Structures are given as C-alpha cells and as structure tokens.
Length: 144
Image 1 (tube, rainbow, N blue to C red):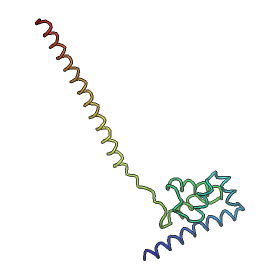
Image 2: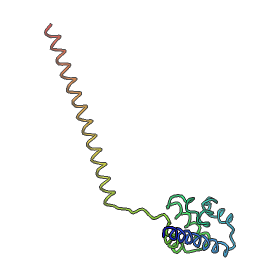
Image 3: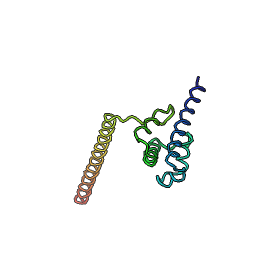
Image 4: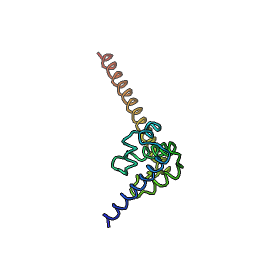
C-alpha cells in the first residue's frame, strides 16, 4: 500500500511538472528564458518541473517561485498554487495559532519582568550590604 501511495505521489508530481512545462512551452519560453525572466535559480525551476521534491527548499520559497513562474507564463497564480497544494507530498503550510503565539509572548514578557526584578533586588541587596559594611568599618575606626 505504501509503495502504491508513493508511486501515486510521484505520478502527481510528474503531472504537475508536465503541466508547468506544457504551459511554459505553449508561450514559447525555454527553461533558460523563464529563469532569466523570473530570476529564479535554474536548479529550483528544474526541480519543480521535474517533480524532484527532495531538491525543493522550504514551502515559502517554493510558493514564491511558483507565483513568479505563473506570472511569467501567464497562468493563474491561484490555480497554480491550488494544483501544488493538491500534491500528496507537497510541503504543507504550518498552522498559525494566534492564541499560542500570544501565550508564548506573555510567557516571554513575564520571564523578562522576573529577571529584571531579580537584578534590581540583587543590586539593592548588594548596596545595602555595602552600606552596612561601611558603617561597621566606621564604627570600628571610631572605637579605636
């Protein structure tokens, strides 16, 4: 079953790449023309067109590359990204949880406040101890 899933994922990647190549060639663009127009790395364009996911960078870079690719070829960006997201092994968008982000921000702020309070108390205690020591020294000198 896993072999079949892997084969179907590979087939989907290849079909996606063939779709992109066909659209590019329909507009009379070579791969090097596309690279020149979009300023995308040639290796990335090749990896996307050839379905070589192991050569793909992080999702955000692939999505931006596909946006540039679609724009240069005259494709709908939304349709291109929808086809990409439909790939079984396409890198998925990490979920954004505002509550977790706010909780993390608050924990960081509380930690910063506690560290600041600890530093202030340490400095105050040090100053107090230094003052006590000076008074003790003066008392010792006065007693002589």
